[in-house]
Image (tube, rainbow, N blue to C red; front, side):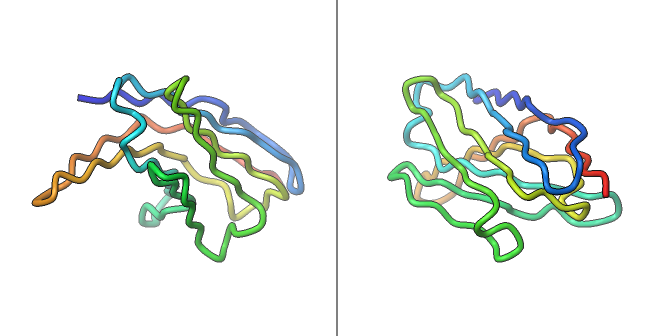
Length: 119
């Protein structure tokens, strides 16, 4: 079982920046693929950033160049630096940990943190 706790959300004006952090309880943190997802009211939950155990990253076009995901395996944390924020970035942001077992995946979610961007 992995517990994930997000922090760093809040209210920011358009064009501003926020940094989200996710702290994980697992001693096997380094082998997990970590991701940040977001869900706006009435919409599906979408991936905004992924980082593998090897440090490879992936972003959708909507945030590429504005968001940066990073991890610190010594501290069991994964951060999301969000710059040039837009009103459409407003959502609840969730941290996710995934570990492949070959035949299935172990997946864990945090409780989410609200990000509100005022235009």
